[in-house]
Length: 251
Image (cartoon, rainbow, N blue to C red; front, side, top):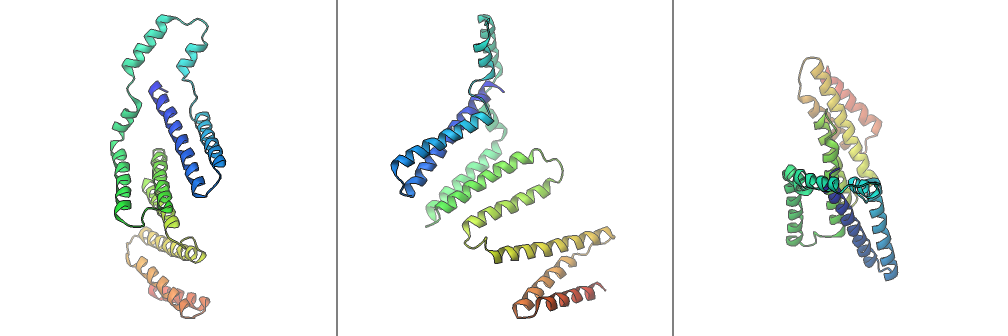
């Protein structure tokens, strides 16, 4: 690891630990906790994050600096030549990555600017729930972008799954009752019918044809099934009617 990259990640860990400590203090203040507990837990969480960051990611001392410190016979000429070569060959790690991923950095800044703008113009938009959902959304985007580098096949499927997971996270935090049992059942039923439509369309394509009416037929059958069940028809009878309808269309 280059020295500039080492210093960048070291400073990033320190900044993240400070932000976690500030967030802990703010949450304690909102909960009307004692100031001694606020100070103690803020310092403890910041120290724990800082220790974990530098223990699992990078060490406190750069490897070249550590080698120079613990070497038995350090030569002054060798140190000077190493410093001059590092200063000449090594560019700034932060600006190098910003230039390399300038479009991604611009997109993140644009999202943050849109969030701040909407928070100012829409009354009641800015709240703890929306802030947490926005931060989770940004974190999920970063995680998905990092993981996508190691995926070489079926990237479109990965992008679709990431979009669904992101929408699920935001909806569960912003929409009341989204995680209810009834809503989960309806989503699973819809996903099951969508899977049936996908399987049917795949079989039609494998047999040498392409019939776009299959998803529409399955969707209409889904609507008919739900409407019959909601009007008091027994579920087994409604399912049998839908299956007979599909058999008739297929024949």
